[in-house]
Image (cartoon, rainbow, N blue to C red; front, side, top):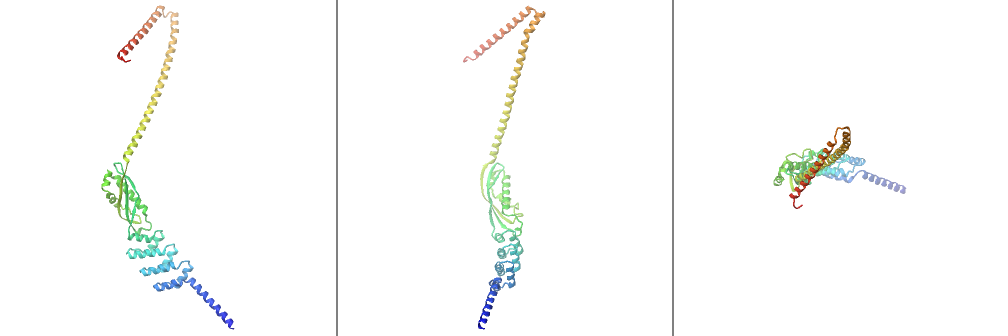
Length: 334
């Protein structure tokens, strides 16, 4: 009898221990006690439901306690819904607390939207309180006198909470500032004007409203460094002169080739004419013989013609000898 009582009593004790273990496994009792002690209304059945929904209770209860102590009006359902949507509950609560302390208007819904959009809402709030300085890379621009200037600028920006969702990022700010620098330097008549008054660039660029459509508000644009680069205008003129020279050389070569071709053509034409002369001279004896035979030319006429030809040849020889003598007299060194 005693044995049955001990056996039944031990079995009941084991069942009670098992029931308590199962209860503690499903109900984070420590978190529930912490919430009750902090004055946060979290039902025991809510904690059990989180267990079934595979939501870590500590990721909900602890941020809820922090929000309650900071005076924020949020509930457990809102935090759990944001966690199930893939958001970072702890970061959202930290951002809300920082915005509340800095008196920045930021609602829980907008904070969740910024977090789900992939932006760090806590860093955005911190940047709203403490502006960030963005340094642009070296921007190369050429003034109207052809001198290159290398400009580096520092842009002080503050996060715009209202435009964080859908607003452009830092790359857009850097690109717009670089475009403004190139435009202003390019419109300067002399590069020395920019060196004397570099703040003209910052004032002009800042007045263009480059932060439109971005997630930032530009507070100031400061020119950090201006260096003189190459003489682009002189280099371009040199390249143009070299190109013009090559074009002129090509055209001269073309004309020379045409002249050489024309010379060869005239030589061929001269040879052709000489061949015709030789052909005509070859017909002269035949014509003379035919004239003598038919009586159209007498013998005396033939002799008279030969005498005239001989006299003409003699005159040519005398004229050539006199010309050579005059040339020798005019050039004694020869």
